[in-house]
Image (cartoon, rainbow, N blue to C red; front, top):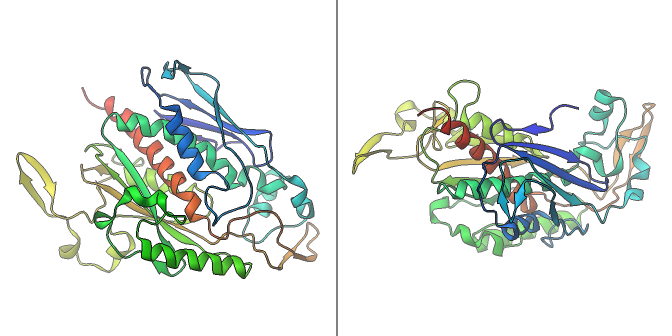
Length: 359
């Protein structure tokens, strides 16, 4: 199966599925000599793990990461860094009724159309359980970026029609993790939580928005044609389960603006050239310009509902599927560290690529 490798200079190979004994990954290309804070890596996994917020699934996993190679006294050796995260609370029997039926909104049918068979247990490889691997690898990438002064922060900026309207420059992003819904504005967070609890009570689900800012990104990251930095970020975000949309900077709003309204004017201060505004989201011509890289990812509602849904089985016969198992009524609170991780992987990859681009 292809499509399990992400990145070029800083690369992640991901393996495992929701109800396998374990999931895991191999990070290739991390330079030697980087001292890793393993507790910080585990801390990022703890933010994503099932049960990390009362608004999510009831599945309980410790998501304890085990490093198998590539480190000596917590220092990277420049060799592949292999790690495991064991699955300890899988209940495969919850999915027996799906062996021959296809859940609306899921990858069940398309997976079977592509491969001729599928793992029906929790969605198999298509399950969001796989994203724990991304978070572990992204935590390594984050520490590599931190050595160059790059910081990545994401937060929930929308749940259904409840939106956080304040710009990120007015928010205390250090307070994101104090909120069950991962929103740094207390008033908006309360309304988001109420909407999620309403959906849970109705056996329904709701989508949302996650915003992200990368600060301290040096100018020059990204390639000018096919590997534009914003294109790489878009691919990274759209590879996350349930993501249906991506925009950077002014995004779709730019389509209704004039050029005279949208252009970021240049100015010079203390010998540095800056933009007066940042509608480009920190990327121009596919290359970072030294300003904050700012983007949003839109998540659809979770496809598994705790109410009957109409579908068909392998023979095309109509069936009624009853919601079973343990699922999130809204995925965005637990997806915040996943968005951060994928952004870190992209930026670390391009940081290393840029180091070889010029003398």
